[in-house]
Structure formats: structure tokens, C-alpha cells
Length: 80
Image 1 (spheres, rainbow, N blue to C red):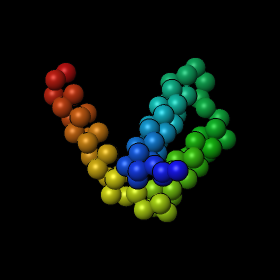
Image 2: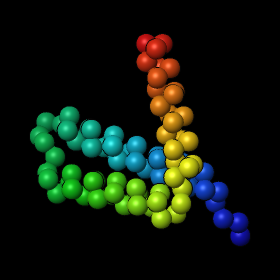
Image 3: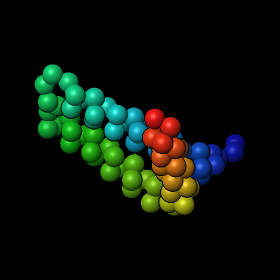
């Protein structure tokens, strides 16, 4: 059985972080503010993902992915 490539793992972590951030943003835009417990849980999840990046030695792949995403967002802002 082959193991996933580190870039794939970093990409999955980035995807999860993005989804959690979007969920937190949506909660803040709702009619009532999110409970402190929910926000604390989301932040713990984000912290666990950051720790996974470090413990699995994925920093290089993660930085490459996030830099690529920033570049794409910058170009999108220029087009808009």
C-alpha cells in the first residue's frame, strides 16, 4: 500500500482550514452571534491542523500551496 504524497496531505489540511474559516465567517454573518463554545471548538480544530503541519514536516509543501493561493487571489482582485 502506498502512502499519500506530503503535498496531498498539505493540500487536504489547507482545504480543511479553508472550510473551517468559511464556516466561522458564515456563523458571524448569521442573525445571532455564534456561541463562544462553537468558536472555541473551531479555533481548537484550526490549532490541531497547524500542529499537524509541523509534526508531519509539511511546512514546505504547505507554504508552497498557500503562496500559490495568495497569488491566485491577487490576480483575481486585479481582474475585478
